[in-house]
Amino acid sequence: MLEILLEPLKYDFMTRSLVVAITVGAICAVVGSFLMVQRLALLGDAISHSVLPGLAIAFLMGANIFIGAFVAGIISTVCINLIRARSQIKEDAAMGIVFSAFFALGITLITVIQKDNKIDLNHFLFGNILGVTSGDVRDTLIIAFIVLFIVILLYKELLFYTFDKLGAQAVGLPVNLLDLSLMILIGMTIVASLKAVGVILVLSLLVTPAATAYLLVRRLHHMMMVGVGFGVVSSISGMYLSYFYNLPSGPAIVLVATGFFVLAFLLSPTQGLLTHPVKTSLQPPLLRELKGLWKRNS
Image (cartoon, rainbow, N blue to C red; front, top):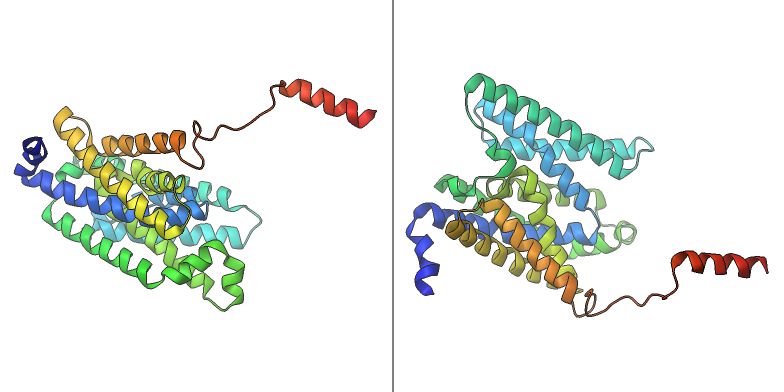
């Protein structure tokens, strides 16, 4: 058994990939817990798709693609907030408009770049964790350190803001600054995850481990710790499955994380589908509606 576990570590690319996968699994669960509690999963999806044009433009300019992706994510967030604040359009519609426009721009730019330069940029969409370099590992660890430092530094303020935004504003907390800080954390986490699972699947790592923890514990810091456990175990398990069964690494990580969510959904001690079945009336819904109409008219 020990030989099986140690075999992939003989290769440097697997060691680098595991370090990135574990790091990404941890920070995604921490930041994703805020998204879960605030019911902002769609925002993570919007930002993850919006980083694509930043990647392409940074590649064209010869700049760091991580910085380009981060800048594009922040610009998309500003656009969403501007549309929401200066019109009667709801937040989900603003997210849909901005994320689809940025994603379409990113796809267009990547198509043009690939046509002119004969290079493959599709790994930005689906991830290529086995191709991470030592520089990518360094960048991911730096981003993770900054994200965790900001979360620890602002934890009490973010906790208050997350559960009671009006109350936080009433006691004088800088709500807009906290909102911007959370957007920056989401953007940095998505940028760090691009190599692992790409733009398409990054939302899964942000939401699924945190959602699994949400079914098992109540307090936010417990959710973060349990979510980190699920995220890290999913990342390691996915990497080993991809190595031994020749599977794509990013999707394998996401499928393992989804498997943990399904187990928690079925067997959660407080909310499980099998452990706490919902008690419903045996009467068909149509019969219940007819009885209600009869009682109201009698």
